Amino acid sequence: MTDPDQLHPATLAAQALGEIDPVTRAITPALHPSTTYVRDSDNQYRSGRVYARADNPTFETAEALLTALEGAADSLSFASGMAAASSVFLALEPGAHVVAPQIMYWGLRKWLKGLAGNWGLSVEFVDTGDLDALAAATIKGRTKLIWLETPANPTWGIADIAGAAEIAHSAGARLAIDGTVATPILTRPIAYGADIVMHSATKYLNGHSDVVAGMLATARLDGYWERITAVRSGNGGILGTFEAWLLQRGMRTLALRVERACQTALLVARHFTGHRHVESVLYPGLPDFPGHDIACRQMQGGFGGMLSIRTSGGEAAAIATAAAVRLWKRATSLGGVESLIEHRRSVEDAESLCPPDLLRLSVGLEHGPDLIADLEQALARAHN
Image (cartoon, rainbow, N blue to C red; front, side, top):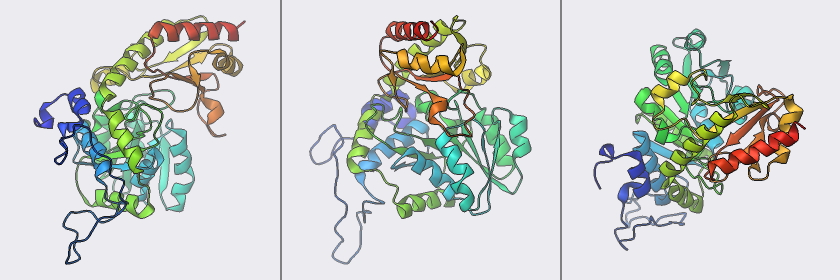
């Protein structure tokens, strides 16, 4: 195949790196369910494969594709986004200081506030969209990791990756980015100085709401990446073989799905801006959204398929709106082909920072005007 560095991400994704099975000449990657591999007669493993918890060629297809898409040195797949994310923290030495966003995926925030302390990590939550606040929270020689999520779930705030990388590296820390929402189609964090990129591959990478998975990509092969690899194998957080095969299949349509979701999300955001039943629309593609200029700089080709609306009438009106939709599906998750709506505060825990009047929208592949019409009638019913 042509050098991946010379190809557009859409081409890389569609061709899955263009690999052809050397035995069958099949253009579709094979599924390898075997959990173990035969040793050579002298008891060695010259194939490089020992046991499926660490080695499986089905994993490697999706991993190689993410490596190319992210411009990374290597990638790993995991049993879930949480397995991938927590491995980044578990690979740190006990006692390490970590800086994380105030607004972020609530499941990881809960883990950091609870179980991370059992590992001896000291976690400080700050407004990572404010570089001054981020710099003030970063302690040279003690802070080992800055974790960013951009756009940040569920208010879609934007963090300056390049600015954060400079702060992290000046302090001797690493920068990890949750790139789930932007995907490598829109943002390649390593190009802006990030050291690690995490994806909840359940979402856009797979894109069909039928696989739970996580992935990590690294800017370099070093001792830290070796520890992350050991955490995955040692803790057993591996992806099932069939799930890995479904993941790589979903990744082949990633570029098209993201492009369509971005177009429709912007259409929805513009329509409901200034709407009589909507207090505000939260979407990085709107010119007056805080961080829009940064998003323009580090998101190429669109601003993502996720947005939120804050309804007039408060929490009761938000819940009533979600109850009244006919086309949008009331469900957790995001990044699938179907459009989802969720009253996010109801899902998160008692310490949630999510506004109670917020509805989180994951825009799928339906016709944009149909989605708008459905949300219009739902808002009207909720406010009557």
